[in-house]
Length: 119
Image 1: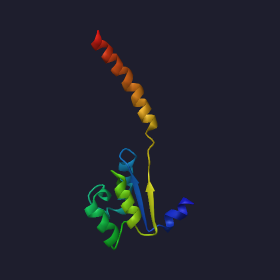
Image 2: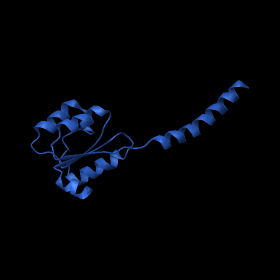
Image 3: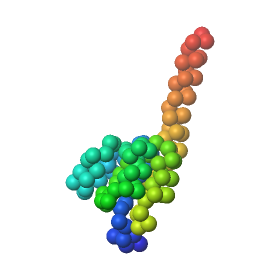
Image 4: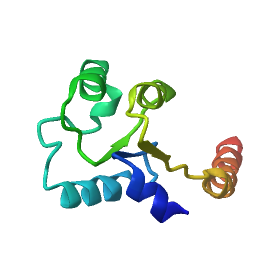
């Protein structure tokens, strides 16, 4: 049950790639945590110089941490270094529909431009 999992977690990492509701999640985290992570730069989980000390040397870690992830490296670092009672949530956005829509929108327009150029 998700409620039980959340209540037993010492820290919750909410991570996501760009364009997967990250700004909303980070805003939620700031509102809930009253700016506990204020000293860290935005999306600090992506920066090796801040993530390792934060995960291994911080005496007090914010209960909720939200961050975009730019690659799989930071996610792996969180998984390896986080407290054993941490909950790691990765929000994935299925891009298939967006890609299909972009193709349907772009290809006919490109073909039309190329046909006009050939005349």
